[in-house]
Structures are given as C-alpha cells and as structure tokens.
Image 1 (cartoon, rainbow, N blue to C red):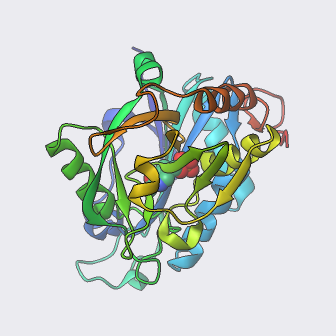
Image 2: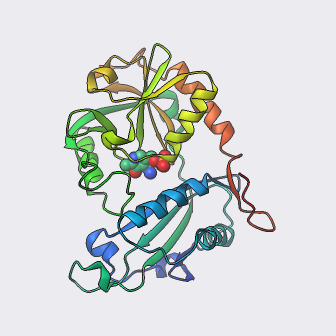
Length: 300
Ligand code: PMP
C-alpha cells in the first residue's frame, strides 16, 4: 500500500512518524475533542454539522481551536487529496496540547490538531442483511450535568466500559441507560425504535450524543411521512418494538434483531429500517463539501 499521510500540528507526516508528546493532555487526561466524519464519493458528508459540533464541544471545555472553520475545512480537504481518497473515514482530533504532569489545562499553550483519513473498512455486508444482537449493560450513561454527552470529548471511558461489558457477553454493541433507567444510546451510536409506524429516539436531555446521522435519519424519516418523536423510552419499549436500529457515522443504519435475548419483530431487519437505510445512502453524496473541485465549494 502507498504511504499514508497524516496531518499533525501543521505538517503532513507519514503514518509511522505521526506521533504526539507523552505530555499532551489529550494522552494524559483525555483532554480534548474529536469528530469522526465520513467521505462518500469525494463528498465530506455534513461537514458543517460536524464542525459545528466540534467547535461547540471545544467551547464547552474552554479549548480554543487554533483554526477558523474554513481553515480546518481546508486541512481536511488537503488530507484527503494528499491520500487520494474519495471514500474515507476522517478522524479529526483537537487535544489540549503539551503541558506538565498536573491537570491545569491553562499550562497547555498550543492545542494539538490531528487529521487522519483512512480508507474505510466498511462493516460486513452480512451485518446489514442479518442485523445485530445487542444487550443493555449495567454501566450508565454519564449524567448530562456532570460531563455532558453532547461534548464529543477524547474521554470515552464511559463508552469503553460499555464495550467491555458487551464483549464479555459475546456481542459487539450494547445500549446504555441513563441514571433514571431510560435508554440513552449505544457505545458509539444512537438508537431508534419503530412501533406501529411511529419512530422514536431518545431526546437530547436523556443523555446521548446528538449524532449527525441521528439528525439526518430524523429528517429522512419525516420526509418519508413517518411520525418521528424525540421521546424517552425504557428497555420494555425496546423489547416490544417492531424494529430497532442504531445509527452512526461508521455504522450508518444497522438493524438490531435481538436485545437482551428478546427477539425483535421477526428477528430479521425490518422494512422500515431497510427503507430508511436506502434513503440515507441515496442522500449521502448530495450533502456536504466537495473535495475534488477547484475551490472547496460548500455544496449545501
Ligand atoms: N453516540 C456516541 C457516543 C458516538 O460516539 C457516536 C459516534 N460519533 C454516535 C452516537 C453517533 O454520532 P454520529 O452519527 O455523529 O456519528
């Protein structure tokens, strides 16, 4: 494979030379923010929304991103061009930067900026055909008044604890409940349930990341005439749903066919999920920023 170029603090370096300081507080404390972004056919999907979330996450933790959005857009585009990628997954990381061993973020003078673009290892096709078996776990979602799940921070320990429980149970994803027992989200994706043609996903205050895919799916489903509600629900509602699906940048839309041993619907991906996934896939090349045009023109 040809070399992979990674943007690290102002320059492009080859993968094996892409390194950060052990004093970077992103490494020492998970102090920083990030985005995972998808590129479809040379189109950076909903980049404006991803950047909005990134800058809001940074604002929330008082981290000043050392670039305007336009500059960051340009860096992303340069990274894709440099690696000749048309279909890719981008990891954009802003860390607090180098400090000392103490917690004080104000001792970190220069935030770190990293952009990694890779050819996406697409999830196996059969996953979409067969659907996913998941569980609910004992780990609860961070309370929004402690560390808001809306901040897409480098501190993913809450989610990692969920993933450990899932792995130990022999499944690849799990649902977290919030501190009151309402369903919040998966470890790296949002959750939707479908019952009698009504689609529900937990509202922001329940404690979930406001997924870009989640927002797109809400729009798409409404356009298709579904009654889509952001409404709290419990595990019971998941168990008795006609269909359950997860959404995320990497996963797109994946049907869930079993939750905590309860078979969902017919035990196969349902028609609503399939319809929504198809519309989503048709829409992804239309919205976002085109990489391979003369100037980086915002398509939307
Ligand atoms: N929740 C969590 C905790 C996530 O990490 C992700 C992935 N970014 C999502 C939901 C889905 O968000 P998006 O659709 O923006 O990828």
